[in-house]
Image (cartoon, rainbow, N blue to C red; front, side):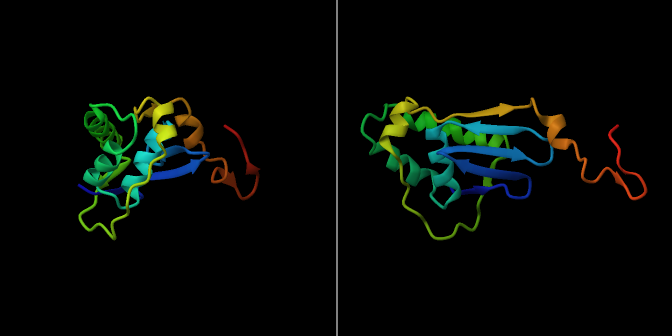
Length: 138
């Protein structure tokens, strides 16, 4: 199966090997560990789940339940609506993983939901401006 990033609702940034995704519709943001970021990046860059799984099997030290871990992570990304099915995948990309990153995260890709800044993300002081008086905080 192929997936793509849900660009209609989400914004993502990968910095220093860590992905942060913000849902622009509800203000919830998501953080991924390094290994989760690599899995996510491979999926949204055109690798199918089957190709990702085969690459994970080839990693030194990969646990026997790596398929279950991948499937659980993908289900989480789907549940959070971060990825959606891609019916027209482009050119396939060979998945790339750093075995040290995977081992450092115990081969457990994670995506954690954070709701603590929803109100801040929805605050819109730029558009709460009156032409006559300027910005007036509520």
